[in-house]
Image (cartoon, rainbow, N blue to C red; front, side, top):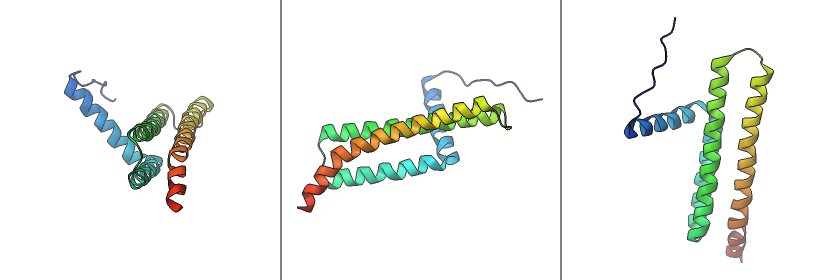
Length: 127
């Protein structure tokens, strides 16, 4: 029989330790997060090259953060689903598909923002 879960003490430092552990676990267990991190690095590099404004940096950073957060939420739901039931379960499947859909919506929105900010500057550099 497994031991009962005992949450760590709720100190400020422990909350950050748990949060960073969650990011690390999510990063190791999900290849999708790696794809988003590569895309984020590309956006940051192109943004630096094109010298985007401070407001544009804020919008790009917010989009990156939202997509990464959505991917981590999706990963957490996938982890919970595996812990609950490894067999086919329509309700878990629906929850997983909804979470994946949220990531897709966020990624599409971020792509639109990135295109609106970066494409005109890129075209301008081409002449």
